[in-house]
Amino acid sequence: MTLPVQIARRERLVTRDAAFILAATFCYMACFMVTGPVVVGFTMSLGATVALAGVVSGVTSLCSLVCRPVAGNVTDRVGKRRLAMASALLMLVSSAGHIVAASPIQLVVFRVIGGVGYSLCSVCMSTWFAQTLPQNRVGAAMSLFGMMNALGVAVGPALGISLFQSVGYRAVFVCSTVLAACSIACMGMVHDPGRPVQKQKAQGQQDAPRTGIKLLSIEALPAAVMIILFAVPYFATQSYLVNYVADRALPVAEEWFFTIYAAVLLAMRIVLRDVFDRVSFRVFTLCSSASMLASLVLLWCMHGNLAMVAAAVCMAGGYGIMCSVCQSTAVKLAGPGKTGLANSTYYMGFDIGMFLGPAVGGVVYGAVAPVWFYPALAVCVPLTLAVLAAAHCVQRAGAD
Image 1 (spheres, rainbow, N blue to C red):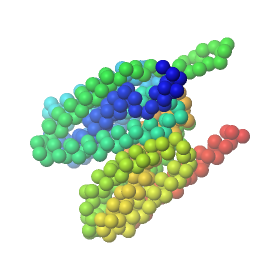
Image 2 (image 1 turned 135 degrees about the vertical axis):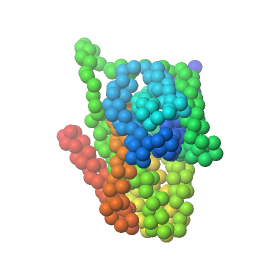
Image 3 (image 1 turned 135 degrees about the horizontal axis):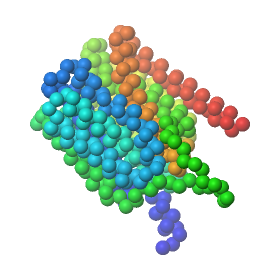
Image 4 (image 1 turned 30 degrees about the vertical axis):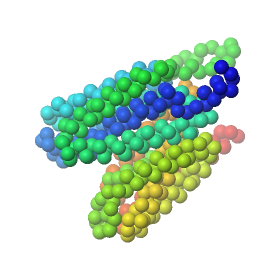
């Protein structure tokens, strides 16, 4: 085989292994998301109060957040295929447990198991995928990885609602179990075992002693903080858009907002795939901040479906694009051998944003009139730019 052919093969993004990793990523994400819309109702059907049902629903995300630092360190030290299959097996056990759960307490146990599995699986899969990539194509490739996450996030809840309405709660959990099994099967088809990356050492340098558990990747921290600030308005919108439209009596079909958002985001990630490696993080942050601000302004001013569609498009260009940009930047800055910790730091930011969005949204929605809901959330945009400026100053000071 000639050298140019070898180089071309190394530079390919969607190799056989990458395709199976992407398929497994879609399946585990859809497995996690498909139960989301029905957990509260199912818990209440088992005799729980509304408050307890909310706790049961949220315990998975809380458990996932707590496990992130451990997940990052473990991912950097063990084989990715073995860890990914073990974590997906935990998700399968959790999904199957939902089918047979007969009380809220049993459901909490199975959701904790699912939270541990999801935390390990999300960090491990993104790290495993990044490890198979040429370093100069990380941005483009992570956009594809983000696209599969977006598909899982979009398809999962829609499938769950459809199954619940047509069959019932248990059918949703059977579907979740099948998706977890499909994810394990795809992982098993990957040839690359994802062995830990050995750090290069200079000639004559002694092996450094193994350090203990690290909670965060300092290099990835600015990207994690920024994704928190982008996620708060997004998840607040996800939680309160229906109430906002109803309270303001707006003539819009709000049920289409996130479908349009998902479709536009998929198109953007395909079209901009190669741009992720050529445009700087600062430029992406400035453009996405402007897009996010435009989305919040449109939601504030909308009085018809046209403005709602435009707001969904701008939300995709804001929060949606920054999810891929922040994750790929965290991975590139951390470097080989630290991608697990970088990914866990990014996902910690994502988890915090997913938790704070509904919480902050609830406080704001209860404190101000509905018409001022989105202007209040818009404060996240200048805060993001402040974090960007601070990170740039720290970087320049370190270079000097």
